[in-house]
Length: 116
Image 1: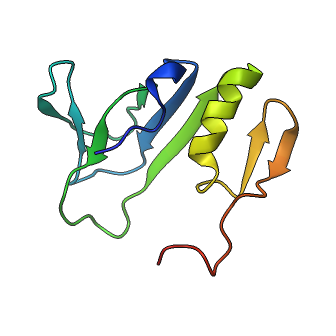
Image 2: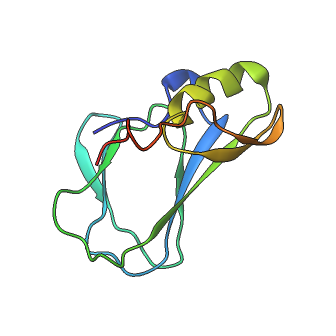
């Protein structure tokens, strides 16, 4: 399990997940009491969440053709953006910065340092 954004982010940055086909694996998450729950992905239905949302993909095998589109939406507030940037530095080679426009991520790992 992990969080995409710290509690400080709240809903100033959101991760929106959109399944582009039917999935066998779904989203596991912790509810407010710490109990593990399941959200079942549905074709064409998005789920969005902000800071502090503890979640994981369920353990198991997926179809190699499964596609889950992940879209980040965020505040242009420079303080919020600094927190968000810490989380995306190793995920996005290029992105639209609310402060600088479309940029190449200088912190994106090169092929020699990426996990295989």
